[in-house]
Length: 231
Length: 339
Ligand SMILES: [Zn+2]
Image 1 (cartoon, protein in one colour):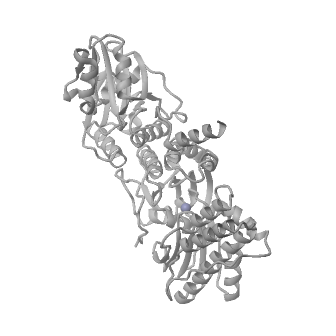
Image 2 (cartoon, protein in one colour; image 1 turned 180 degrees about the vertical axis):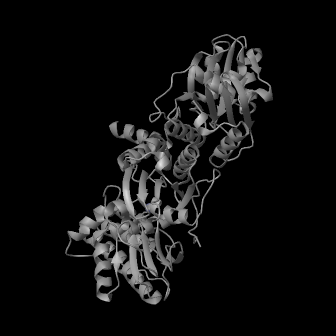
Image 3 (spheres, rainbow over the protein chains, first blue to last red; image 1 turned 90 degrees about the vertical axis):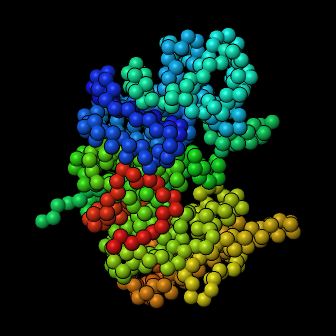
């Protein structure tokens, strides 16, 4: 069994190959390079190094979002097309859960964050050992999410490349309950993605869609206008 | 005997998710288009983010259907051709990344096609091209006159300086309270009218093959505005007819003059607006009188589709113009020759 894992859901690119539970190769970069341009060459190069042919792959794992809309779509388009072309199972995993796996083993809760501007983020809360979701992945105002998390009264480990952007606010709200993963543990790792994917059921390839966790601005405006009409 | 060439085409530059298999660049084996018009209608135009979301939902379904309808396996294909640009960046990169992944999975050559070259080569699926040739590409995103001396040789001799013709149609339709997309509605209204408001013809400087439609669009808006201020009733038919007459006269006039100056053996039209009945008739009559062969592909090949991308991609494939895994969607891609 050879798994290919792909995470392009935020600015880092994370890819890995895992054979029968052993990591063959793993790459993570945080160079803010356009995934549309670089993801496929990186996959091609990595597979060449590992001497794995496309036909050797048996499973595809992909980070399904939330995150950058375009980034999530690129990863999912590549993963769907590879899985469908090769007639192998596709396993989508929450991109926040992939980040949360960086803190697996923490005695408390793990909170992955991806910044979404204007004080908001894609954010979720996971149990530190089991990685079961405690508060579902969502697009939320960071402060109100932190206040909700605080009520649980447990230490929380924050992870993700965007943690730095919200560090001051996190400390302000949570004080001593706030913990931060080291900078080397803030990038998503595709080996974690594959390990999580192994526990999921495969999804129907054609109907696998990104989990945006947010409607488009055009739809939000349209809905607002419709509400106005009803009143 | 030469071996037949089968190319899978993929097109996602705007609001159609499309895949097609074409044999030898001339014969459609299958042609699948998933239109998103219904999803964009309520917004009065294409919303790029929504277009991208739909593409990702449809892309593998559409490719699978193209293969199934053709009764073919991927290993029977010779290459994958995909629209590389121009278009909406978020929409283009779905097709490009799907094409890259498919080509990689099956170890097939990948060809990146210019959308306008695709529109031109749509004609070849119904009528062999004869050179030198003049192509009028007229759609929601483009209004261009292109001179071709041979396959893969493109010289843009005229283009729009502001709005594309289709854009002007949509904007005028909106002022007349017609639903999106506006082109077919204006065309239908124009035919229902015996009278036409006279709007200016924008010819630009003497000898120019460029187009400008924003001035004409403003005249229509002013006309409507002034009538409303005076409390006058406006017959939408006569406004539609007047607007269409102006577009048709200028487009036909410039295309005719270019055909004469370049002494072409064939004139072809392509793009969604080429399906407009008023424009079609005007061009047909004008070129019949001149005795120059003139062709417009049938409606499904005028609007965006992937057969046209496969058709153009076939010539590029024959010339060995392959792309690689670093191909990206190029929203502002220029039309350059392949020779
Ligand atoms: Zn087009």
